[in-house]
Image (cartoon, rainbow, N blue to C red; front, side, top):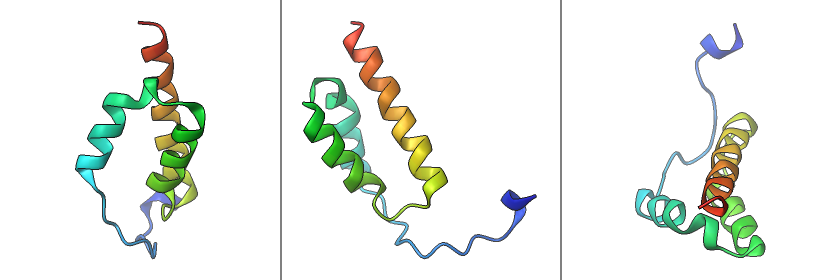
Length: 68
C-alpha cells in the first residue's frame, strides 16, 4: 500500500485559507484565464495526486455555478 508510507514531500505545507475561501466563493464567475492562474497558484507546490483532487473540486464548482 503506497498510501500507508510516511510522507516525504518537500512542499511548504502552508495554506492561505482566506485566499481559498475567497476563490471558492468567486470561482464560477472568474474568467477562464484567471481560473487557470489561480489554480496554478493554489497547487504549485503540491504533489501531483493532491493537485488533481483540488483541480477536480474547482471544476465541479465551476459547473455548479454555471448551472445556477
